[in-house]
Image (cartoon, rainbow, N blue to C red; front, side, top):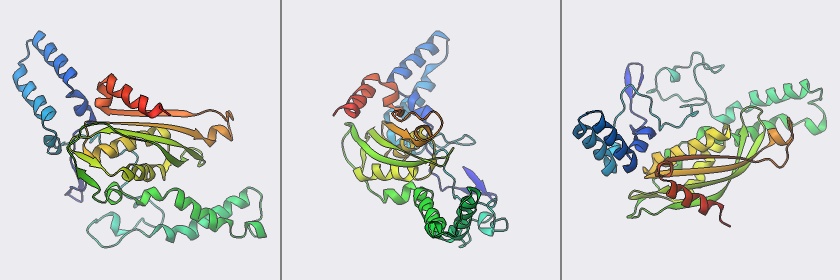
Length: 294
């Protein structure tokens, strides 16, 4: 658990690391127990521990991590985009006492400063920000950038909005070709493409539109495709605790198309496989066949 001002912060639910989920596959359990037998290790205690978390998905929810980094936390996601190190917030008590009612300014309140930054950028390019065609460009650009990065003000809990349902099914759910638009954090230029998500439910399913909304949360931030892929997979895992999650993204990066090597037909494919999709080749193959089918 995290500690703020000497108090335990319980905002984040304790969940097991993905490495634990992977280790409790039947194949890895058999291999591990076999190795322990050869080494003379008492397997009874270890086997009972593993079986507890292998056979009882509900037990995973009660698995608490102490002084260990939670591997299922979404990487690269700040608690708030604005902290005490942000200019103008050096003395902001909100960042030192989370119980106060004070909140950081709305994103719209940042528009004047952002517009001034764009105006300075235009001047640096040798342009005249006062000419007719550019007169309102700084404000337009600032508003556009806020829209491109609106995912910073969205959380998984808000987007899911309790659209998680009990359903006695364990068959694969796949939603493919979800359109995605994001901003490369290295060059601040767009990349776009399609996302395919699959998961194996364990008694709970997620409203189908929520998968697309999860993509929207994390793509509407400054990103790299590799991290975006993992964030989406982890978010689905946190939402419904499935037996496995698979995410594949195929993207076109304007930083490769418009600059640098300028390879206009190049595409980048990234994938994240968790749980059964990582451990079972047949399950992984079934998902990939469904994704690539017409």
